Length: 112
Length: 113
Image 1 (spheres, each protein chain N blue to C red):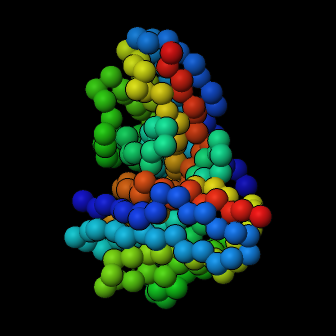
Image 2: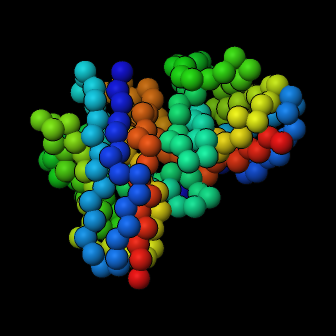
Image 3: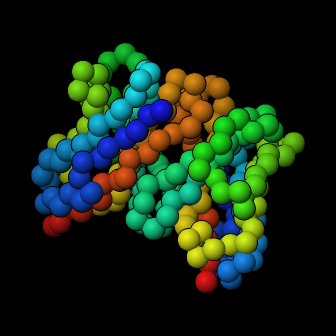
């Protein structure tokens, strides 16, 4: 069965650079969630989208922005990167037919 | 808002022994409850979930969990663990609108031979 795809899987950036993380939900899933998991920490909810509109917002820094496109894929844009942004970023998708979120493998961002 | 507390950050156990990973939650509304497993350098995989009905929920890999509303707990159990169960386990809750998950801090299960 198709799963959530995230790209890239690994990304290394310098401080103050920008990064774009991509998430491709499972086909026919209309809802996408982004989470940030710092080293040794639990995943923290960042933002979610339903039918291309932002549906909820968590602890997402102002330096980050995200959107969901017409094909339901989503991109998380991160600017002015800081060392503390180094983390594993998860995307999850779902639709009303399911009472769970399906997680992607994550993108590991390292900021040097 | 909801919150999740996983009382044990690490649980060492010998192979074939039983294990219980504890999870307590706090919420002013009804919730859905989940357990996820994360193997090193991998994403989160759903073990089991409680939505309604029977309070004993069976999941994959021989795991089960019991929802206790009065104690606001959702402890994960396995009667006999394997080396391959070594991973980090996260308890999570969401409200019934299912907008977002709140995760616990995780419990690292270390199964020793």
